[in-house]
Image (cartoon, rainbow, N blue to C red; front, side, top):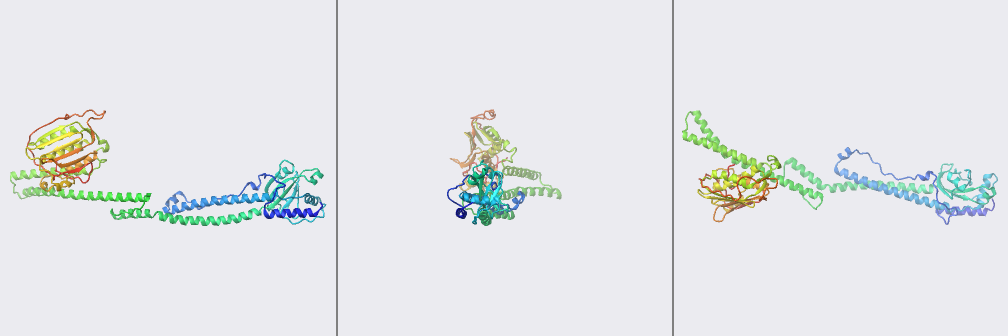
Length: 570
């Protein structure tokens, strides 16, 4: 090898390329050819692996802890993906820059000749300048000749393929004999030495990979610290957000626990906004209000029932005490008085039975009625009214009861509907004057019962459908005070309504409306009973009865504490 100046120039050029990790046009350029070596396995980011929480243990955690944990895991996963992507992109860019730098290193023929002579044992009088690169010649057989003061790098198959002319170039990562990781760029060499020896050679330029790995290790440490801080901050923020978001739930929980502990249904939760928590709070408030109203009605019903039961029970006890004292003392009660006592006892027992029956009707729900929804069926309202008219004529033999019944079919519970119609007719019968007239008309689903009694005072009108309400003028008369309550409830359950009003010319007019049709469904045969348009007239003696407050009261399909106009017998 001759000309140290060329060698010095080559070293200077190589040093410049190593300092900048980039260079000009590549003299020995070529695309990298993988050989399955270490460069094919790049490091990758792995997501944080936290402690293993079983599903059971996770679900046992408080809700705010679960939310904070889920937020921390989501942020940790996102940060891990971002850090891994950043690390991989940086590694690829640094490796690409190193490859570019290696491809721009220019090795002249004199330098190659000096290396070859040194390996052949006849070194030339050439001074090799220090260089960060390792330059070596590679033969097709895998023999390498390395520049001085550098650890040899074992030739790979791709290097041998380049030397043999099978590949245009090769770039790969391997280790030298000292174990240092090196990046190697190999290109064919067709200089004077190869021509003189008549062989093919390749020249490899290698640089330490610490130019890439050192910045990557520093970057990995920075990313790890940043990720840790980010996950910790996310967990803290998640816990704070969970606490703030669950404050309405905490208020709701405290309210539910308070209600369960104290049975206080007056508590209300403040609601703001239109989110799910606000809707839940409003639903809870509505539920407690409904429960409070239901409990108040229940307590009122129990109190009213107890009050109403006290009178017949007291009378029964008094009469039975008289009979028992008579038997004990041997002082016989006159036969007429004894018979009157027994009649009174029987009447009071009947009154108790009627009251208990009315309470049972009012207390049961539609679902709890006999058969539930299956008890509802299509019935002929005109037939039911006809049957109720027969009972009304027996109870008011001195009255004239006229009927004009058009056909009308409704979906209802027959026994309950008949009881409601009987209650309306009984009220009219009880408060009609002797020899009076009761007019009954059914047309288009509207049942009208008109009497010619005293009517309803306007101030008593709002109370006629309330349970146990009795008109002051009728409190001395027998009755449970639940007749019109049953009528209103039946109308509501059937989808209709009931109304009471003062009729023109005196008397009271009750109007019961029920949805239906003048003809039965195709699968229901025409009902038997009173024919459409049938009118019946009879004059009989009026029996004693009870009258609710005159006036007008409407209960259109609503069971708002119905009351009673009279006290019909069931």
